[in-house]
Structures are given as structure tokens and as C-alpha cells.
Length: 190
Image 1 (cartoon, helix red, strand yellow):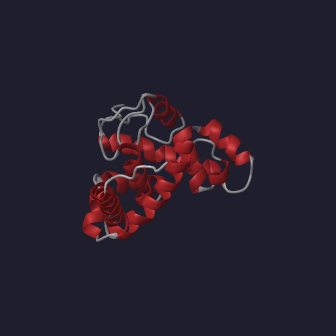
Image 2: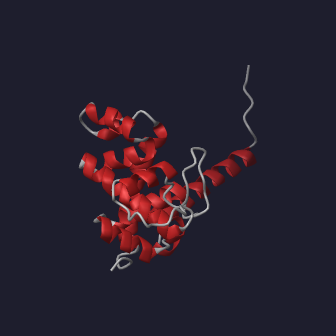
Image 3: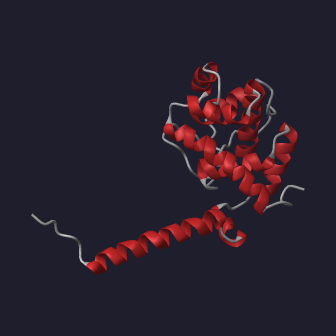
């Protein structure tokens, strides 16, 4: 019994769509800078610069976290009630104030971009100091400290220990985006 193959035109159309998608992916990831800047926008440079300096962390890493967490939408709220550009939980913001990592007089409005960047950057720095490794800090930022502690106990490369596909993807995406931001915006934080 012969199997029926789709008509030639349909195969050609599907092939053309696949090629177009591959070409567009290449443009966004490796194409000209003006195209990549569409996929990797940069906003709120002064707020990122000031918070990154205050907390002694790479501003390009902060920009990469913002891009991954919210896509630069300050009004986004997750299902877990994480708020704003860096998806900061209100409990995390309170903890950063209690630990003295953010001034007690700081605004509580996590939907305000500068406030959110301040709290998110303080928390990111706290995690980097805790784990002494960017990728483990990113895993904790995305999946929580308890999960990151469990994965870090396993030893070896944290990326191999991460059990959540979303977190594994987040860590890789942020690390890659940090490098892209440094290349696309070399003078953004001077």
C-alpha cells in the first residue's frame, strides 16, 4: 500500500517557512546590531548604572535579567506575584530592607522601574555573595534559594544539577544575554 505524500507545492511552502524562520532567528541572534537591538532592547540605563554601582554588580548582567524576567515591561506581575522589570516579590523587597541592603526609606512601589531595579539588583548582589558564582545566583534568583542550595550541594556544574527546565533556560539565557548586551551597548553604562 502506498502512502500519500503531500503535493509538491505544500512541501515547498513548508520548506520556505522553515527557511524563513531560520533566517529570522539568525538575524535576531547573530545578525546586524540594529536587528539584535530589537531583540535585546536597553532602557532605564541611569537606574541600572546607579544600582549596579551601589551594589557592585555588572550592569549588563542586570540588563540581561530585566530582559529575561519582564521583557522591559514595568507593569508585568507574575502568577507568583513577582512585580515589575526584575520580577521582585514583595517579600524579597521587605527582606532586602530588613538586611539593610536597600535603604529603609526606599519606595515600596515595585512597579516603579527605578525602585524595582534597585531591589532586584540588591537581591542579585546578595545571591552572588551567598554563592560566589553568577550561574548559581541566577538559579536562585529564578527558582528560589532553597532549590539553588539543593542543586549547589550536588557539586559540579550547577547547570547540570538544575531540575527545572525553565530555570536552566533562564540561567543560560541571562548569561548569553549579558554578553550580547556588552557587545551591543559597549558605552551604555559609562
